[in-house]
Image 1 (cartoon, rainbow, N blue to C red):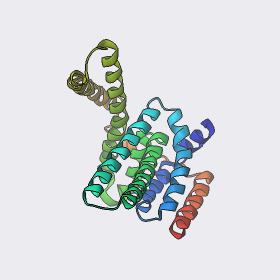
Image 2: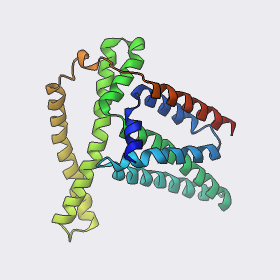
Image 3: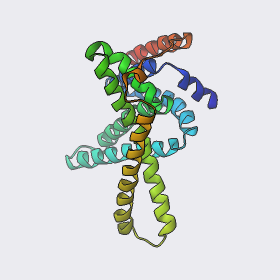
Image 4: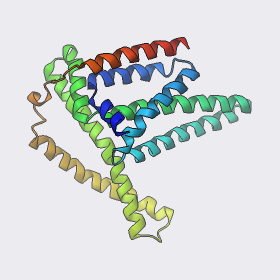
Length: 236
């Protein structure tokens, strides 16, 4: 698992970003059989990546809850509209498969690539379109957003564990009042720390966002394999 995770993390971020964008569109256009095959392949990648991250398993559980939530809403609305139960179950299963595969695409990209690498990849792609000065600003904004999402998840998890340990007799309504306030207060402090980190590392300057990618032979090999696999998925 560590070997697979290390190999995926070593790939060029431009390649991973492009594959994620293409798969994100294709997962809504290809047949459900291809979606299931793609989901199984992504699971092989996501599992080792999540295992080496401190909040990886929590992110997987949160995304699973997200899928179940929207599938449950679809089932409820379809039943209200009078659709046959068999058709409702088939449509719900297809939606669950497509959503799970789509979320695994994003999760594999987030767990295998650092926020700065993704920002550099975006800056490299959009620089010819909007210019160098605006490209690094977009890259910085994207990197901060990507970095902030797992930090929010980790903060929420820590606050919940603290609330359970310090207030074991508190009910659901009390925690519903305490936990959001504590999360917002902690995130406000982390936002200030993040601002100081950006300034101390001089990331608020265009010189820190100069692309320094090195396209290797394994990137060419993976690009060819992905192009073949995506082409075959449209045929199946």
